[in-house]
Every structure is written in structure tokens, then in C-alpha cells.
Amino acid sequence: MSEDAYAPYAAAAARYRPKEVRVLFIQESPPYGGDRHFYFLDVKAHDGFWLHLMRFLYRGDFSDDTPAERARKDQWLKRFQADGYWTIDAVRRSISKHEHEERVAIIQRHAAGRVQEVKAIKPKQIVLVKKSVFDGLNEPLRAARLPVVNDAAVPYPGRGQEGRLARIMGELVESGNLKLA
Image (cartoon, rainbow, N blue to C red; front, side, top):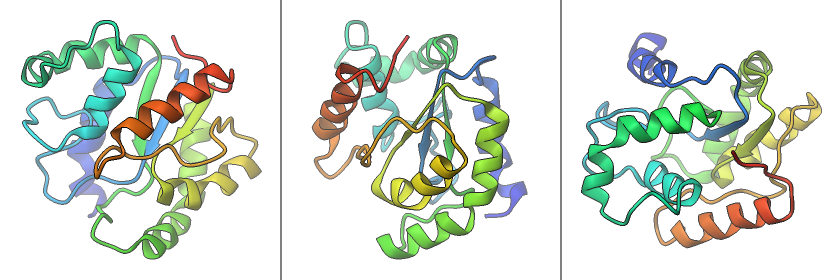
């Protein structure tokens, strides 16, 4: 995916960028096809990271009525922004059809650019979401003295990982490593 092809993703994310990023979630890459992304409003399916992250962060307010919550996605993203949360992709093209080792290698090839990007964002905390992202970016980000809060991958929801995402995020909060709004 060229920078031009990534432009819609970047523009959607930029609309919800907080002035100060308290927690930066780094996910793997945009999905294949151009119709889905964390910050796209008209997504009807396959938006598990957005759904489960909102359910974790806003568990007292975010209901189990997925269609209703998707209809309010703009409101949720504005709250996410107001609370200082933001997400970026480790790689600017979809790599989800590659095997894990190749994904890690691709992420590592882009690590210097992500480190520079993260330095410019100046987040207070960084959460690496998905094993490939953790394996590819943990060491470069820590070597740059950037505030990665997880010592193991936070699982990407899907294939039964939804409960693990909430559990591991909860453990990060309980340990004091992750401070939420």
C-alpha cells in the first residue's frame, strides 16, 4: 500500500488525534480491503479491536448492543480522543495474510520510522497490541527510551482472544503500569 493508498486511514485517524496523547495503542496494520479501520465510522463487521477496546475502556457505559454502539462510533471516538487515547499502525499496508515471522520482519523493517513517529507524538504510555507488533517494536521503542507499558503482547481480539485482551489490559491497570483516564 502506497502512502497515497494509506491517506484515507491517516486522515480518519487525524480527525481524532488528541492534543496530548496519554496512551498510544500501536496495532499491526490496516486490514486488506479499504472499507475497515479503527477510525472509519461506517464499519458493520470485523472491527473487533475497536469494539473490545471500547468495552474495556468504557465498560460502565459501552453496551453489549453492538449495532447501537457502532451507530454511536463517532461519539465514542470523540470520547476516546478527549481521554487522550490514540492508535497508529505499525505498518502502513496490510500484512495480515503473511505468517507471523514475516509480519515481524516487515514491522522491524519499518521500526525506525515508527520510533521517529512515536517520538513526535510524545505519548505518556504505549501499549503494543498483537504479538507481531510486540515482537517487532518492543526492543526498538524501549531502546529509544519510549514508555512501553506492556512486557508481553496484548492480544488482538479475534479467534477467541477477546477475553485475554480484557484480562491483560486489566492486569496492566491493576499493576499500575497502565494509567487510564
